[in-house]
Image (cartoon, rainbow, N blue to C red; front, top):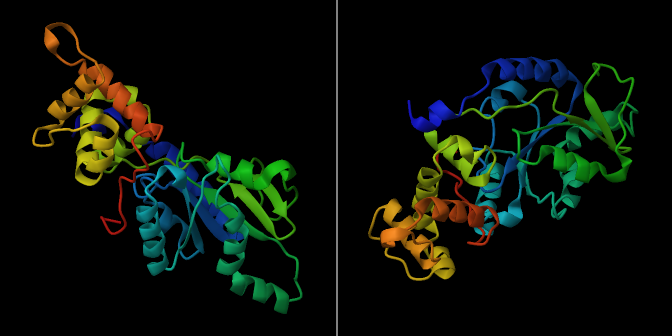
Length: 289
């Protein structure tokens, strides 16, 4: 088992409880909206969700799209469309893309609305359960979309005590996930990418190793951005030497002329997370998606 896998643990006990709660509520919802990180759409989700929700209509919300590579995000949207899944790029901090959510729900659930109309149930609200692993922005999405109208929906059939329902408008109600949907660290790469973005605490990993692995990713797809940020670099070396080059260019030199690579690693990770290097996506549609 890798150091990353030993350091980052999945929570099967918690997940079992969440799985049970989701299955209990599924008969009472019309669709599932899954919030993922647009920079790492695969790593920022729980792979069990598909089997959990079965054939329920599924909408993917690619949050933090303003921090991702737009061309790559467009590729993901096309990929999901090929899988018959609606996907919307959003940014919960700025509110970008959120206006498209309600219309997307109505489009995805057009058959359900038609059925309601035929049964004389015009005006019956659609119910959407919002899911997402920790730190992808699920709560921020609900707070943004609900705005000042955030109000719990009480006394509804199938609504067990403790579930957080919110009225968005007369035609839409949202359910915050009953329980926490934990990520599943199936391999070292998933844990690393979550750590790159800050979704899991990088203190549980070796900072220099994490920065080196990030540099391997950036060197493969975003060399131009690295050069623009840090100046000319020699990429014909290992990731440790590349980190040392970057540190030296920033004046992070200690006695003997060696680079303070720990300081350089912290700087690199911070600048990546703050988009100072550029708009970067670490996963592309079709790569083991």
